[in-house]
Image (tube, rainbow, N blue to C red; front, side, top):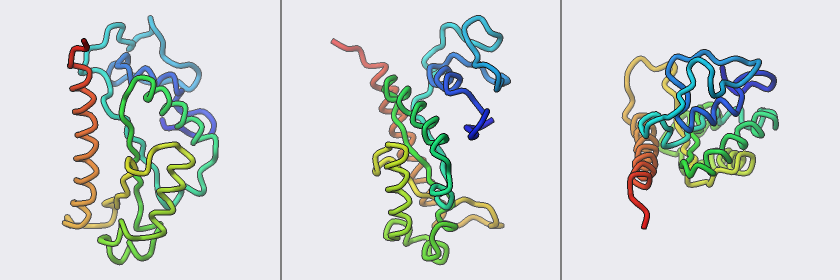
Amino acid sequence: MGLEETGGMHSEDITSILKGHIMEDVKFSQDSPLSEGNHGYKQNPSLTDKVHCLVSVLPADKISLMKDVIFEKMRTIREKARDLKIPQVVLMTRVDEACPLVKTDLKKIYSSMKIRQKMQECHFRLGVPMNCIYPVKNYHEETSLSPDEDCVILEALKHILDFADDHMTTLLTPTN
């Protein structure tokens, strides 16, 4: 289940996931969010149960077509993560479908005005800082690995892991 226009996951369920209250393999309901006392709800989550970086995935070629209600749901979740001091990033996928220049040469991903415009639209509609939006190309038709695609994806992953590591370090550091 995703964040569909109507139905889909409840933002309260995602907030519970962020806090570590949801056990693995739980089936979510469109009717009502999981709450304390329900099967699959973990009362006292450990540090390893909690989310240490919220990663939203948006298709670059569809951002302009997405309804405001989806962004409103995402913004609500983002605000909950912010209140929990969880770092947030966006993986902006399908950049090759959004920009013909990038489709022919992935090395132009950061110099493409079209990709920059898509990043700015994502920034304005979702509220994520530009430096936390990572454009990447999906592997979807390739039959072998591509170093150019790997570098872009691995760079985004490195930043995500750094954000998560910093968050965990902050949680583990005693305050004076």
